[in-house]
Image 1: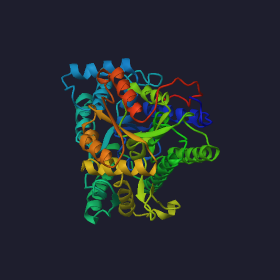
Image 2: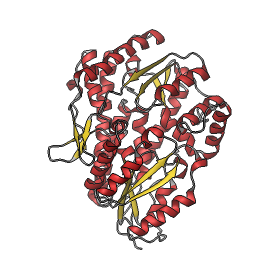
Image 3: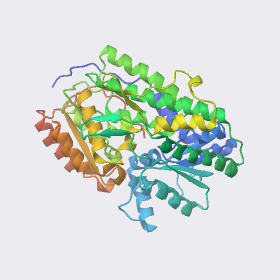
Image 4: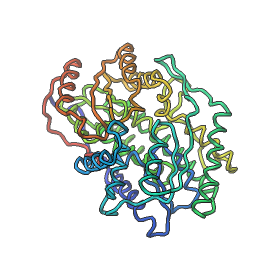
Length: 458
């Protein structure tokens, strides 16, 4: 099997790695600089705490837990510590890794802190069944840390017949429901931190959030190109910056740079996988301890061009006039963001409520329709679905998703595993399923010597 396309490393790879490590360093060392630490999820409305100052740092729970999961030995110690403390093994594996890190009093980045850096407050939103409960236990483990949780489950922002999607305008009362909670959260943050709140910092953060999430969607749009300029395994090291600080200027600026580089790769025909012959996509979180799965696909000439998770957790999308799914529009400058606190929050919530990854908490057909749309528009040959025992929220309805994709004409491979618990990943069995799936796509496994894109950042 000979290479069809040129390939080369990403020029911004090292910068992405540096930004990610700096994030965890800033969180760990915040108190040394008289700053604040707060805990919350990757989906949290993270523009809001930024109104407290530029020295307020978060630890976003899901990517932190994924970092633990990538380190097999540390992850197993965290999981076993959580189970020994009496928590059930069948709950979210991100939660169990995170709690285990606290119980062991160890930070996943010991170069910055040997012990767990306790947050000053908790700010979380609740769309998944476990989001608020996650941090209630954190309070039990660490003491009475002030906590505020925003309910964002206002109903879907898209409608579907099971195969097609269309965006709907959120009802004013639904937007107001979330906005009022955010207003309460701001008053609460001032009280528990003793800091004044600066609306202009919030306004700037909202604009950067819109920039980051729209630009990431534009980068994902470039994956329509054949050959794909990025592969899914590499994309995990790039999308993660948005899960850490999508409302930060540093993240928005980086994604602007990354978009230009990926656009240049497309123009020059640079491929992520030099022997690309077929294209697939996956659905939600991967088994983080088994990311070599995506390199195994390449031995067949198969590239995974992303996932609904990488596209839709950080990317914000809208339906364009020509029927394509494209990056969501946002104001050309910060001047397009209202200056009144309530008004700017309303724009923020209307923008954020469209997040694709929030939609399929409401009904499996919404996930099916989004994946069918990607499969058609990104010219895919098949779909991989991860029956992920580590995340009940994003795996609910996955059997229905498989049937809908097959009905739409796309071959589907399913595999069982766990995003955050290495003990539930049968790698040999998954490879056997890949072998069979590749055979149905007309591919044989061959070892190909080629220059790899850089490996995923821990």
